[in-house]
Length: 126
Image (cartoon, rainbow, N blue to C red; front, top):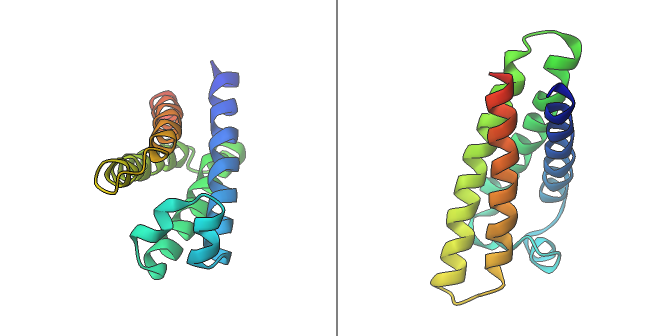
């Protein structure tokens, strides 16, 4: 079980560290061009704040448990990312339904998969 949890943590950490790094460095137009369609729904400062939160959560998924310093933070980082995924699902669903962009359903599917991994890690670590 520990191996499965670590695998989930590493997967989430990589996904959110990369996503956060891209969102913190790219313009909104460039984010849209690379498929991060959620960037258009929010002002750039909100996107940048989310990027910083994603990077901090990625660190929180690995370091506390690895170092043995406040390991409960690992589970709470997963909870925080689960909340982010619920918001992302709502936003991508809205784009798919209201703006009639059927390609957004793929993003919703990715959000659901990431949410499932977040819940697995949170349940296993808390």
